[in-house]
Image (cartoon, rainbow, N blue to C red; front, side, top):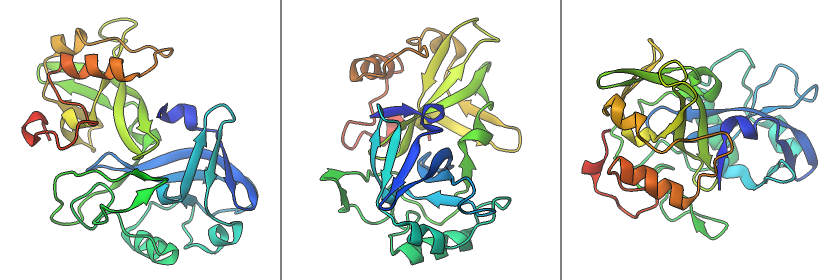
Length: 256
């Protein structure tokens, strides 16, 4: 199912031992635009420790109850590698983190979730192919940090990132919600990260190789919109791109 990142904020997190806190935000990698960690607000339970939960531990998202089930105990979380709440996520922390939980690292191999294409979660294949990575040069970004970035088409600015739409099977960011309020009053549109040409993190700008008029004529997105497969078909057809749900789409169809 597809969820808005901001809609998931505040969902209750349930471990094997009961409630541990609430969703505070997400970290994603800037190469695959895939969620690598959920940031938990544990209240007064673990003071001064930033609790990160990998999607490897996420079992179920219950929309009606606004709860996410994780397959960890409180003791496992408490004894996991420490990350101070005011520190960025370092490579050393990640290496210690995955070693502690004995999970495969996501940065090794040609797939979105590493080299382990045969890992199955809840009888669903949750790894998908992506361009092979020659070295680990990705960085983690927070969805909060990137919200507000300017979207630049090939002939000028067209809007700002308002939110992200996340797939809870792959934990991939499927779309950026772009608010074009300052350009075309009242309209929001969706853009896939696969259509991004490059990102200037220093300038807080995302560049897409699309004309502004083409984006302007794309299917409108509203806060009440349901991103159904029919909607996605129309969106990808408008941009003449194959959907992410199509197995092994031709590489040439993407701008990255």
